Amino acid sequence: MKEEYFNLLVENAIDFLERSIEEFEKHPKYSVIHFYAAIELFVKARLMAEHWTLIVTRKEEPDVAKFEAGDFISVSLKEA
Image 1 (cartoon, helix red, strand yellow):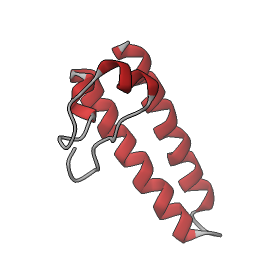
Image 2: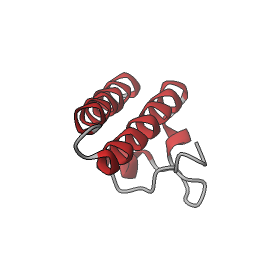
Image 3: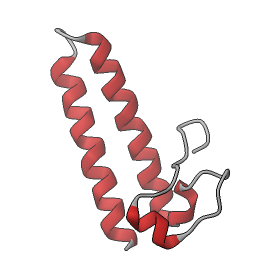
């Protein structure tokens, strides 16, 4: 599970980063938003490499079934 979710997070981060680069000149506002999302996903991938519970916000109890279903609140960049 850990490696699969790690890879998905990294792939999504790269997608956002590529989009940020593409939009840099014509749409700088969206470029910054996509860059922020990429950074957040890279940080979450690093947390995932340690343990999936680190991605779940401290406001709720980690539950693997909810995590796998995507039914959880993930940490913000600040929390991460």
